[in-house]
Image 1 (cartoon, one colour):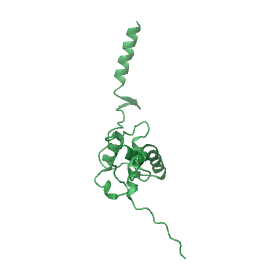
Image 2 (spheres, rainbow, N blue to C red):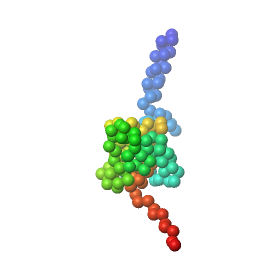
Image 3 (cartoon, rainbow, N blue to C red):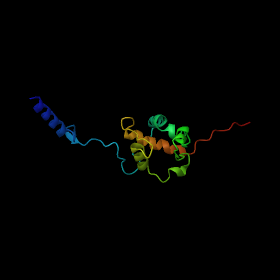
Length: 145
């Protein structure tokens, strides 16, 4: 009897697994590891960029550096040669979708950014944040004497 109940339960789970029911319509689970084609779909806000900066500081800065120059003790100790993102040419040949994919899936020794730690919108905002390293910063006005 117990085996029959377990088999029935397993069959129900398998039948429901391919789709979620939302509002009476079946929809496929959201893909979080595949980079959508095309341009970055998010519009940055101060809040989303603050979150991106936080994710970067926790997950990226230890190797890529606080300013994205790639010159850190950890990168050196791991014999990593990282791009200097403060140089506009370093990311010029990469699309936002390519950067999204690298962040989400990892590359070489770089671990992937797990979807449970950063949702897709967070990763897209992280791409914007990383690109900001090579943009000229506002000059500090000098004091007049």
